[in-house]
Structures are given as structure tokens and as C-alpha cells.
Image 1 (cartoon, helix red, strand yellow):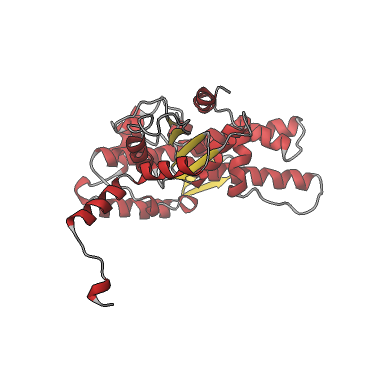
Image 2: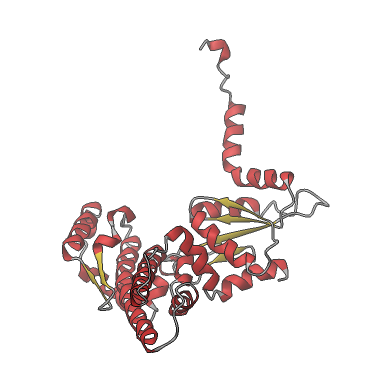
Length: 315
């Protein structure tokens, strides 16, 4: 390519590119406003969040027109919020604008003194993440009855009791990992999520209602933590004060939602196979995660989520 065809790099060009980068969500919002009439624009962490919040919204009004913007993480949703909201209402005079709504997971922020954003346009989950809403005994019961055609009898009651015990054991174990994450972040340490393969780390027996750490895998993870955080001299003993601090929290609220959802789906498939075997039926199809989220979202009780959505659409 000759030098004649190359764009001239000027201060103005760099400033324009920087402005476009900084205001990418406002530009996105403006483009949507100019393309079609939507009731709302949802700024979301990812596609799984979209399945959940769209399902909850359409339960009340199937005709809502919502445009999703999947931002790719919580920080990006907050960036979108900080960028769009100061300008919302000041532009497009006389035009009915779609309502911008922002949805984020709480994560472990309350235990880390991370800044909280207060706005009627921003929703933050009361649990670790939206997936935690889906992983309750009531949702489990409704799925068993609705999709697995399970009658409420003595065997069913036993199944429910076993699930509740298994869920408590699993989330308690996950909460210990959350305690380690809180300790590390409070001390400027690092916990890399890819270092943890939860299926290898936690061994669950669905028939015996137990979840235990795989000691070999646990030692590998501790070794990686120590390598990444040499100054902290990390050990299990050091997280005990955090565990004590969290003792009054329900373990479901502080367990990573994606892990608990994975457990829930596996347990449902385990129970479904047993129900099918008892009826001497044909082959059993599993409940994949891509279809599980809308199915479970439909059955979940999400009072705070629903109240947030309804206030904006007079539902």
C-alpha cells in the first residue's frame, strides 16, 4: 500500500477514536433509538442473564419490545450505566425513549467494600448472581412435578428431603471457596477462576447427599494460589476469620451461582433418570443448561427482580 492511501494520523483523529471508545454505549443506545421503537433497552452482563431477565419480563407482558445489549461483564454494565444515564432525557426532545435498564450480579461486593450504585434504573441481585434465584427447593419441586410428571407421594417427599440436604452441603462447600476469595481480595491477592475446575474439586454423591473436596485437586489449587500470592503465605487457617464472619449468611447467597446451577441441573437429571427407571419408560433426555435457564427462570420466585421490572412498565 502506498503512503498516499494511508489515513493521516492526526491529533483530531486520535481524539475522535478515543471519544468513540469512551462513549460506545451511548452511541449504541442512540443507534437503537434511531432504528425502531422499543419499550426498553436491557444492558446485561451476558447471554445467560438475557435468558433470565427476558423470561421474567415476558411473564407479565409478552408484548414488551426489549433490545438486549450484552456488555460482557459487570464492569462493562456499570460503565454503560455511567455513560448512558447522565445523557438520558437530555437528548431527543419530544421523542418517547426506550427505558434503559441495567442488570448486574451482586457477587461478593458487600464483603469487599466495593462502591455500590443506587438508581431506579440499575438492578443488583440480592444473591451472588441471578443463577442463585433458580437453585431452590421450590423450583426443584415445580420442575419435577411439571416436566417430569412426578406425583407427590412418599418417594417424592424423600427425594425432596435428599435434595435439600444435598443443596445445603454443596452450597456450604462453595461458600468456603467464597471465603478464600474474600480473604485474597481483601489482601490484594489474586484468585484466578480458571484455576478452579469445580467438577474436579467437588465430588458429589447424589444418592448419599454429600459433597466433599477432592484432596488432590484441593492441594493443586492451594499450590497455585500460593504461587500467585507469594507474599501472603496463603493457608486454610488464614481464611477462618472470614468463615466466622460469614457464619450467619445462608450459603446459597454467597456461593458462585454458575457452580450451584450446574449442581442443580445435574441433580435434576439424576432424579429424572430415577423417575424414568421406576416407570420402566424409554430413554431419558437430559436437561441441558441452554434450555434449563429459561425453564428454571419461569418457575423461580424472584420478588425483587419482578418488582424492579414492573415499576418501569406499570405491570
